[in-house]
Length: 145
Image (cartoon, helix red, strand yellow):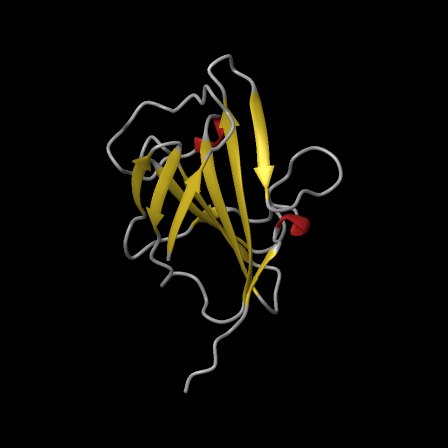
């Protein structure tokens, strides 16, 4: 799966320093892009954190914020900085096939330290990308011919 996240309308985005591409925790503390993937028919979901630093993380959960642990990946995400954001290739062989709901989100930190939180849809209250309301994009199964 290929994704491109681009920030438009924010003049002074703070991009984290580049690192060697590798798994890293707490990438969301500064500018970071995220994808949540929840297969239909259960409560389990996975989270991908994708940083302009080239760092990445992948986690799995049994249900809402429960039993977070690393999601082993066959191939690490390939992240490339593009003007205003990142372009990412993610190997999804580690996630169940079939229909799913997806949440796309971003933490944007500006040069002055201001942070904003973006998602396809937000729940009421403070930002919470793990909340089921954020899983706003439905990915239906495709019938084979």
